[in-house]
Image 1: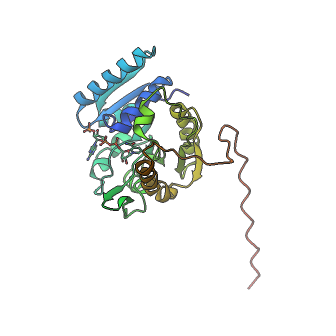
Image 2: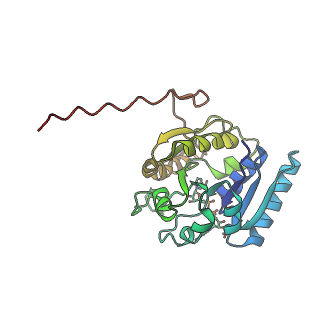
Image 3: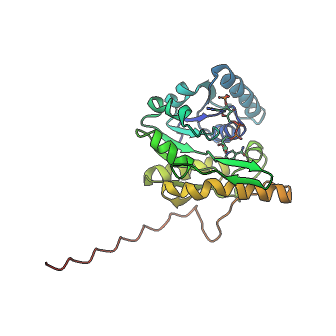
Length: 243
Ligand SMILES: NC(=O)c1ccc[n+]([C@@H]2O[C@H](COP(=O)([O-])OP(=O)(O)OC[C@H]3O[C@@H](n4cnc5c(N)ncnc54)[C@H](OP(=O)(O)O)[C@@H]3O)[C@@H](O)[C@H]2O)c1
């Protein structure tokens, strides 16, 4: 599968890192920014890095709206926007797209990192509410941008946890994760699971600080490279007794 991937917030740490890995894996990538020139400059830098690694990548930069319109799959690698304004403005360009929220609403204080309360439950659900004409999933919350940006670093021991309400969309993102880490993502259920995935990043960051490392998440006893068994049929409702 060589879907064109748009990365909004593509000039940031995570956006650039994901774009690098996805382009390295052969996906055409369009970096998005609020400033098209900044996106083009970032794309040129990444092309240079990839060229040095022997990969002639199809990687370009554009304003967020144009990148969104060009992508079959659109990654949101922007900071959490409590007002939702920046996402809502992109709704027309994102209509019909598979959107992947990588957003972690986090705060940092004297006690360390912590998840922030989001009125909709999670940033991903906020995004879904703002983009009714898009299919919204969430993934890539727990990867560390510097690790992803280091093409020599083996990420195949880390799981990308993928949630979303649309099974086909989840399956596409599971496959996309393999282009980033070398290992398919793990489906963890409906979009509301983002209420758990997003703040759990605070735990990962706390571990990283305590142990001076870049920890990843791994689900044991799951082999995402093997097809998951078909879901069990829902139990039949008991027949109603006649009144
Ligand atoms: N860094 C990580 O390791 C990591 C890992 C997993 C998930 N995440 C999540 O990914 C998201 C991005 O993190 P990051 O560390 O890459 O942040 P970052 O380095 O600050 O970059 C985010 C990019 O988003 C754009 N941006 C900033 N404010 C914006 C706004 N109000 N509206 C639209 N675009 C805006 C900026 O690009 P322009 O100015 O060019 O538009 C910026 O380069 C966050 O939600 C974070 O929680 C990060």
